[in-house]
Image 1 (tube, rainbow, N blue to C red):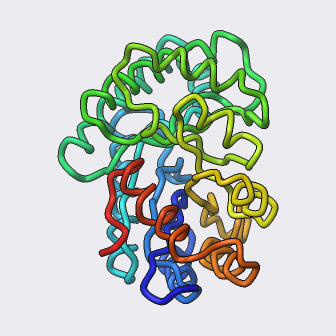
Image 2 (image 1 turned 120 degrees about the vertical axis):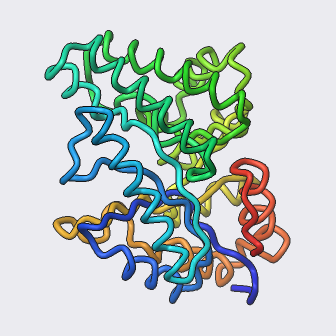
Length: 284
């Protein structure tokens, strides 16, 4: 790895109930420099009313602050997690659940306006089988989010079904984004594999790939541009899930050893692309 070049994990979760400072230290020790801290549901704050949702968002903001105090650059994105919508619908009816998550989106955009959050995420669609009306509600929430993000030119991090090499999901997302004013390049499909990079990018979206060797080999050999992530969840009951917090810098070092990466490409992936897609400066 080249001294002085940044290494960004573009999707990591930190939790006060876990070991967030230790996770950040592991990341830094391996050569990492910057983290995008993404909101997650916290076990002690059920997101069943707007007051709890605000408490949860503030927790994510504090996790980004902790990251900076620990020595890494950090930003956060916040928003209502789509995987909660089915259980909320059982609790309060689908209309009530959708209304609550719509209010949560508006609250998240207020955080963006106040400079406490960089953007919105992870929001989107439920990744497991649900009734069609649940996904339709998710789509309505997405259209609202795209419209508001377009007004602010802020990034949106998406959680959806796995697209694989199938372009149908990206076609659907493109239809939702149409006429909302959102810049598709600033809409990031998280938890991507190399197979979904081209279907996503060809429709104007950005992708954040899991930092796995196969993904890196295939994507770099095809000259794809992508963000890189671990999706670490900081859960003591599930250590190192989804990937350990030091994975991204270790995989970047591995790419150098395999001669898959040089200074120019490193800067493209870790400086130019985050600047364009997320609106962040990873050089400071």
